[in-house]
Length: 424
Image (cartoon, rainbow, N blue to C red; front, side):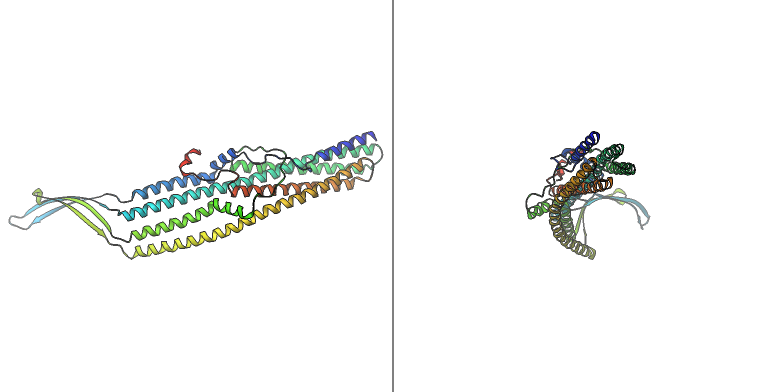
């Protein structure tokens, strides 16, 4: 019985070493500086940065105005019906340019500013969405990685269990059929761990594909999920204060309003001023003058303005509805994070109880009591409970990280248009 008792003690120590107990505080999220660099280097943000740069150039052209110099040249021949008849070559040059009135110039500059603000908000939204994607891929990897580690511990348990069965068989305390069951349980544990390792590698590859420069390191232990700090109203206000999707919707309404004001200014006449020179009568006459032209607006300009005003009003209504939806979603996210923390506590208690039951069953078997089947069943239930507790733990941690991300308390997500060059 000495060999059996030693195996019993070893089996109990293995059970106590499994991640059923309360984990200590650990660093389970990417390093903030590394995460910020990865977000700015992501394809989604890179595209938004390119669009922002292009829009900045377009806005600069709009501020400078699109009026351009126009050069006209003409050559003709004058025929004089006299006796004797005469033919004289004449030519002329004209240089003119439309004049942008001060009110129209101000409307153009306002539109350029609105377009820049919209592009900046779009860049911020891309940065925020990239952060959400990073969190989703990161926690998926953590989940698969944790399952692989837990199933590796199950292999060690199954190996210890098989050793205990062999010892009992040698002592004549167990039938040889139990060895087959123990070997089958070990093979199944190895298969499950191999499958989990494959899923973990796939999750790792997906994360690396999206964020190749992000270091993929994490502590083995995960912290206990905590409930969100503050009240739900404080969180909702923080989210709306930093929500780039809402900013973009508002800036879109501003752009359409600025376009409507610009079109309103375009309903006035368009003056054109220029100078001309004409060489006439075969060079005997020289004409130098100043010309003024007026382009009279038509009905199309009025309908364009009305269409822009209608689009602006629609965009304003859409922004108001979006704010209402985001307010409800933020409240629901906060409440879900609270519920996820409660769920983890319940799952953790269940996992600990199942782990204790499995430990007692294994100890009783090692001491010569009962058969192997209850041990295998209790161990399978303990594994399922442990995996469910891990899933609940990661769900709670993910929900809390998402709250911090959306309220800009996790990583820097604000866009500084003047400092974009600082990000490679």
